[in-house]
Length: 348
Image 1 (cartoon, rainbow, N blue to C red):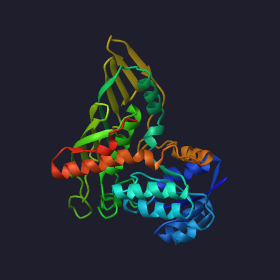
Image 2: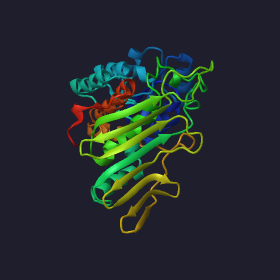
Image 3: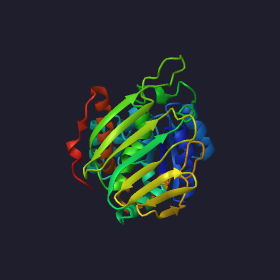
């Protein structure tokens, strides 16, 4: 039975991490920390364990691992502190807010022989895992292009303190907007599906609609549109948005030399394959979770499996190439230029 600490007692920990640890039967949450001590005490009262007002005290309390569920700008420092204390870490996405911080986290995990698992849960979705197998089997021939999107009406309700003053809209805490919240998911996913890496980015990140509590445009992007060039020569688009004021879109479409694969693009079927010869194939595997319809993400089980095996199933090292693409997109948007990523040249 693993002893777990929760760092950050906001909505992501309350809706996903804590319930999934409790449902696993393999972990016991013994410690809770939040900058709001009353919140930590309230959550500890509901779930058992002890509330801590000091992070070092929690990390020294005998926990085997922690979930880092804090705002984006704090991920790196908290994660590194935990790893230096010999504690394994599950860190929510985005991994960090600078490439330098991502590399520091990766190096700290290696130096201390600890697990650093990043919560890129789209790799764990059933249809994505099956799609990867089908692609490798040549179900649509050689993939030549793609489009992938993740958009919904915004994170205003996805916070323990909901509303227009959510930390997601604050550049001091979030640093990045829709690109970091949603774009990193699909950036990491396309590399996973294609066993490939993004080597060049042309992007624009904009604030098109979202306003803060004072009626001013938020200080981070609410839309991102990227053209990704892969090491293998595949090319495609990735869009992330907080202004899809209707049904959530979490779809990926792959265009191959022998057909088209649509993943979570059809409400009736999780995977649809349209063959070049006119044949159709429909696979009903699962439904991807949405903000309004939460299901198990699979992240906690995968993290606990990683602790069992002594190796991260979604390691910080494996996520760094996607983070490079996120930072390249930000640079491209600022400079108006195509940005190459030489470190990602190697195909997986």
